[in-house]
Amino acid sequence: DSGVTQTPKHLITATGQRVTLRCSPRSGDLSVYWYQQSLDQGLQFLIQYYNGEERAKGNILERFSAQQFPDLHSELNLSSLELGDSALYFCASSAVTSGWNNEQFFGPGTRLTVL
Amino acid sequence: DAKTTQPPSMDCAEGRAANLPCNHSTISGNEYVYWYRQIHSQGPQYIIHGLKNNETNEMASLIITEDRKSSTLILPHATLRDTAVYYCIVRPLGRGATNKLIFGTGTLLAVQP
Image 1 (cartoon, each protein chain N blue to C red):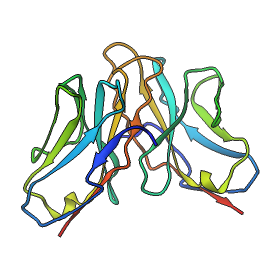
Image 2 (image 1 turned 90 degrees about the vertical axis):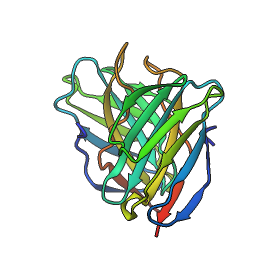
Image 3 (image 1 turned 180 degrees about the vertical axis):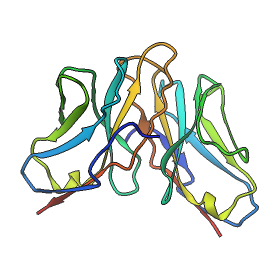
Image 4 (image 1 turned 60 degrees about the horizontal axis):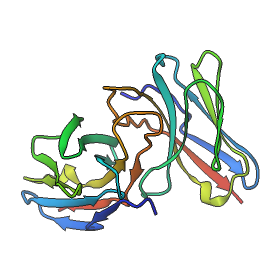
C-alpha cells in the first residue's frame, strides 16, 4: 500500500459525458501528479500540482483539467469524453518537487471505460 | 520521448538473479537514473535510483557504468512476485527541474517457476 488513494476504482460512462477522478496523496506529500496509461500510448504524464499550484504540464488535452485543493487532495476532470479516453488514470504523490530523495508513490489507479 | 532503451522482454528462473539492462547513451551530467516497476495494471512502484555510484537497497542493486551511458538493475533472488514491467527512467534533479516521469515501453520480466 503506497498510501495514495484514488476513487473510484472503476468508472464506466458514455461518450460526451464528464467525470471527476479523485486522489488523496500520502500524508504530508505536497506534490500530486496525474498519469494516463492507455494501450497505444503507454504511461504518459498529464499534469503536476505542488501545494495547490500547477507546476508542470504534459500531454494533457484541453478537455481535461485538474486542481489541487487546500487539503492537498486533487481532482482530475475529464469532459466531452471520447472512446479514446478509455484508460487507466494514476495519481502519484511526492514529498517535494525537487531534490535527491523525490520518488513518486503511485495510487492503485482509476480504470475509465468510455462506451 | 523516452531517453532510454530497454529490451522488450526477459525471462528469469525463480531464485536466480535477474539482470535488467538499460541504455541511456544521451544522459546529461545532472540526470539521474531511476527504476520503477509495474505489476499487472497496478500503480508503478519505485525501486531505486542513482547518479554514478552503484546503489543498493532492500529491493535491488543498481550498477551504472563509468561513462554513465548504461545501467543494470539487479534483483538478486527473483521470485514469482517480481514478474512485472520494469521501467528505466532518466530525469534531472535540482532546483527548477521538472519532476515528471517519462516512461518508455519498459522490460517485461517473466519469472519462471
